[in-house]
Structure formats: structure tokens, C-alpha cells
Image (tube, rainbow, N blue to C red; front, side, top):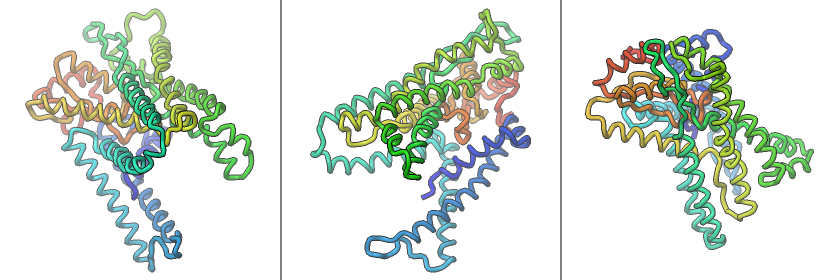
Length: 413
């Protein structure tokens, strides 16, 4: 009943708190052990959230009645109430343990696979309902849905896989390389989430207080006002988050501290990177705008009988990409695969993997594409660098010499 959300919410809260609390900030910007401490704090906070949510669910079910007057949940004592809460919280931690085991022994990230299975399970559960009503709908609506679905999946795949290299060099050898890359999804799905929340806020308030009915009608999903304001909000949040997640000035300073410099530019490195990021963010922003207006447009204008769109399609594509990359790595790996480093920065993880591939070291970034849809808001999705055991020493040397040992795990550092 609780799912994995208490842990996800707790980890995001801890990540936000770490921006302003000095002790947590030191852990967040520290090494692998600092991140482990943040994870333990998140698990403790998740316990409090899980207990609160479990108690609220049991209390709600106790107060709800069926049409025949009987209670949905018949709990006669405080002890039974406590037992139900304990079972739900215990089941939640069992699910967290399963996620950890999947991450340790599987080909993908445990939380990603749990989320993936939940989305697929929900979709499969809705299939019988649509088949029962199939005869009442126009067959052309399903053809339209299939075409739109294939187009959205294709666009998501292209945007998640495409990267633009920025030439840079290291002080050790001064050879220009393209290890640092900008993604074509720099603002993640956060821009879509915040935009839809903002656009629905006045509608929710008008319904709640019983005022402003004309405003609610003008901002109803599918209306012209809804589409225009949604597109405006998506553009604002997309470029805002894209800049915040990259933060060109801080990015350039971090690279300089590690000995890396942007090459072949006439202006400052930060300005150069900001202009490039602004241009490369445009395709993803347009894609997010399409994701906002397509579902309501299909329902209103094409008589599509169900909602298609939102964040579920990119999530499915991203997790599928992670699973495929993991499967290919493990299938072609003839020795023992080990986790040698852990990252929480998309650009650092991608740069190090590109460096390793350039010197002939095969690697796999577990959870990379799923984290690409979350950036700062996905701290529960750590990016693990998996390599062949025979490349352990070479990988450690490269990360230590060129990246100051960034993310090296305690057991391998």
C-alpha cells in the first residue's frame, strides 16, 4: 500500500535540506562515505513518513463505509490498528531491501525496476477495461493513439541518447578531447511537473473555495488558455532548471579545480557553455510542451477514451535503456563485474565513462538514463560505475589522477 514513495520523498527532502544545513551540505559535497551517511539519514526519515502514511491510511479506511453500511476496515482496538501500521511499515522496508538486492545482484537499479513494474502493472490492469468498452469507441482513435505513442517513444529515445561533445583538455597532457558532453534533456521532467502543478493550482483553489468558476473553465485541460499558459510555464521552468542543473560557472570552476579546461573558445568558458546549453535545451523544451498538450487534445478533439502522455512514457524509455545497457554489458563481460564508483552528477558520470571508453575500458553506468530524467530531484537513483574486475587498477588511476578520486567506493578506493 505504501509502495516505495516514503523512501523517495525522504531522500528528496534530505537532498533539499542539504542545501542549507551545513552538516548535511558537507556530507553531500563529500566523498562516497558522505553519501552513505545521507542515505542512512534518508532511511530514518523514511521510517517517520511511512508510519505517518500508514496510520493515515488505516484511519481513513476505518472511517469509510460501504453502501450496505458496513465498514471497509473493521478494527475494534488500538492494538489491531497498531499491528496493521507495523505490517505496512515492515512491508515498505522489505520492498526497500528488495530494491537493494536487485541493485546488488541484478542488471538494473532496484528502485527503477520497482517503478517500471508499477507503471507496467497499472497499464496491464487497465487493458481489460478498455477491451470491454472497445465496441463503443471509434477504431480510428486507437490508431491515433498508437501513432502518437510510437512518436513520443521515438522522440524520447533520440533526446535521451543524443549528446553534444564540448572539446576540453587536461593540464597533464594538453590534448583536446570530447569527454565532456551536454545532454539534450538538460531540464529533466521537473519542468513538466512544476508547470502542470502551477497551471492546475488556480483551478484547484477555485473549486475548493467555490469562486472563480470562469477562471477554472478557461484553464480546463484542452482549452486554449490551458495550452498557452502550460507552454509558457514549461519554457520558463525548462530553461530555469536546465541552467540550475548545469550551472555553467560552477561547472567550469569544478573542472578547473580538477585540471580540465574548455578549449577553442573566444569568450569565457561559462558564457560559452551557457549559450550551448540554451540552444541544446530547445528540442527538449518543445518535447515537454507536446507532452503537456497532447493528452488533453487527444481526449477533447480526437475522442480518445483514455489519457496518454505525462511522465510515464519517458520513464519507461529511460529505464528500458538502462536495462538494455546493463544486459549488453553483462552479456559481453567475461570476467567479474564490480561497482567501483558512485556519482550523483549526470555530467561527471558521463565524462568519466567517456574517458574510460576512450582508453579501452568497458563500463556501464547503472541508473544513468533514469537519473537523466530527475537530476537534482532523483538522489535516490545513484549512478553506479560498473567495470570489469581486470580493469580495476586502471580505472582507479584515471579517476584519481584526472578527477581527484571522484565517487570512488570505499571498498575500491
